[in-house]
Image 1 (cartoon, chains in turn cyan, red):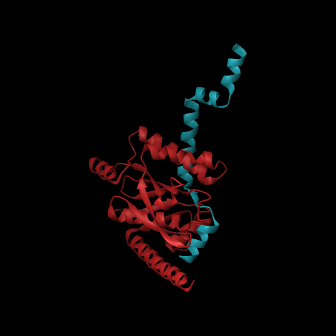
Image 2 (cartoon, rainbow over the protein chains, first blue to last red):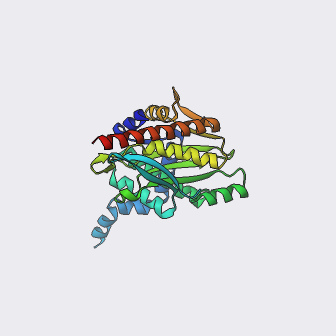
Image 3 (cartoon, helix red, strand yellow):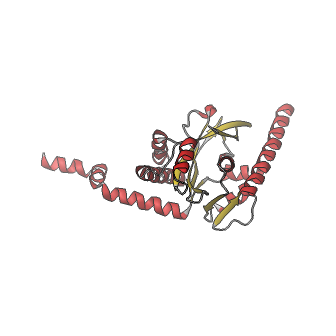
Length: 54
Length: 209
């Protein structure tokens, strides 16, 4: 256990199964593709558009 | 079994941590880790685990309590169900959550560990908090035994394998760990014995000081 505690003190504990990570990234991409308006607003493009119209 | 508890070392003492099923509000808080720590793996994994949880929730394939898990299994023995476990502690209130574990109950009643992340930069009285990762794994084994689950498994990477080797006391762990029920009991017993020994050491040091 000393070994384990020392490991936890000196290493970040952040692990993902490669399969789960790939699936989660795919879900994230799918959601981005599904909500393009939200993305546009987030990166500030919507504000540019408003300014141009005004 | 409502809440699972384990102990970690923080500020030179053993302190209790609770591990619970996350509900929607808690998963939203976990998702925000990415903003707190945008460059860390933990931040990325927390956000992705939350996204995955919401995606499966829309499909009706998540549970937010042990009772829900048991009920879902009763309705469908072959149900594939996901859940997010979150660790928190009364004595570390400034962190709403200390760590997360995203798990699945597979169609054949195995427990699969998909994500394990401890919030980066945790400290208590200016000292690191250690033992959270190991404590979560041992707690998951306790839950598996309570649910009569035969096997826990997970895919590993070059960076996670050494950690799993230390927790499970199995060498070498390659790209997959598979822990059967008998081994779970043994690992848990060894872990608790070691904790007792650590606690005795800490108590002795406190007396000497």
